[in-house]
Length: 324
Ligand code: AVI
Image (tube, rainbow, N blue to C red; front, side, top):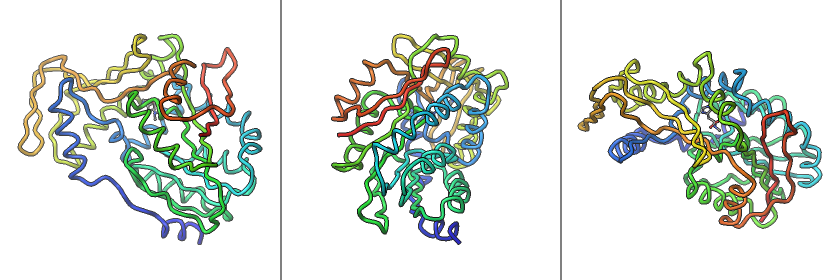
């Protein structure tokens, strides 16, 4: 079956336990303390993220889906026929289905996703619906160099797809490094379609990252559960709470896990003391202005070929088609 072929083609570069352990210990030993947000995405974390995208407060997903619906015919014309779509952080693949449907003869699809469970589920869903698209899934941390598999159709032009404002989860230097790596992966004639959440009023932003049902809080706490399961740390999941605030100065949501009391956490031979109110920085979600995004592109050697923005009163969100 096509699902079987897609699963057979999977490249497995799932981060090792040793890697997760080393990153956690290094992050908790640094000042301010931090943990990498990429480790939110185990099977349970990816499922919680999907639930976030369906909360009334989290506007980016439905806003971007509507924007994609409007701009994909133009993207398809700009990209042309015989495309190899390479997606960074593909998650459930909900947006991918729209993109692949709109393109003229897509020949191959490479989702790069850190959560093996999410990756397999997306492939099981997409492969039967798109029998003519060669599925080349890669389970990997896309911030590390990844060799993109070559499709059978070697003439295919690459289109990188990086929706959801996942770019915003990286700080300035990481974002520039990522865009430079994308420029490399695109090749001379490739393009990239990137989604960026835009700066807006603090109330809308803080509501999106503090949904009333508490799903975002559960998503943040899940990071500690994942570490307990995977590297044997002993975080008390009841001893920390989620906090997400918008920093207007830095144009970003800053999400932290805050200690409710004095406590110690052990990871193998390492012990970390937390006083009440001590915080671990776990995620940034940068929100862009035209100028702040342009600075990243300039530093990475990329140019805007076409741009689409939502129209007020929709929350501001943008899609940018990029070339070298
Ligand atoms: C995946 N990423 C773009 C999401 C965001 O908005 O930064 C992750 C997220 N964190 C909390 N809510 C959603």
